[in-house]
Image (tube, rainbow, N blue to C red):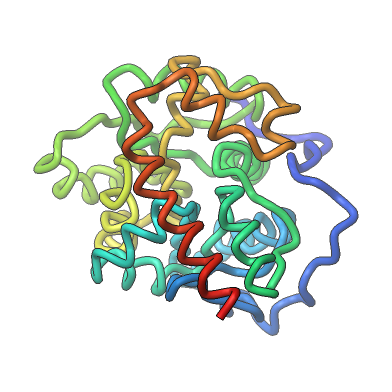
Length: 271
């Protein structure tokens, strides 16, 4: 494989937003962490979040960094599942993946700089891995999806190395950490769904030997082309959920459960 080099690609985030001040030291938690219905989210933009991950990829002596990509469905799941709530609280970075999280923070009077879509953030991390000669391990999703997703990632992050790809069952996933460790991967992307992916990272990230571990949900499906992503204008307008519902009507019960998030935020903000 080629090593990454040359000019570093531009991040896939909006610009012109005010970023939080630099952290006091590498590995310190973000300076501002707010709570939405008892679940934390960090107040920082995509560029600063990527910088924190780069620090961990480069610094072998620092502890591994778990990254959570938070959406309203996860908030409600954490309210029902104490172990998931603990996993999110213990993560080094909790990013506002869903537009509902951005809306809720604004509604509660604690606005966030921007939304940080998990799939775009994964691409940015892979670009950093290519530049730093770190490899990525893809854990989860359906058989064959990870390999297809990597081919697309390789186009977006030339020089990226694949340490391994595994689509495990539940029991196999619990035994996967030593395999990941033996691969020497620096970045671990886990696509086991919610809450399994974040619980796996909470339990096994240190054992896996990876510097950064991120729960990526359906990102590998998007990158593989298995699931089409909403057009950019709809994403910018915060209507990606509507596009996904139109293309995947079976998601309606999940979205209905997530709708309780908006009602509770609305009610608490009024109170």
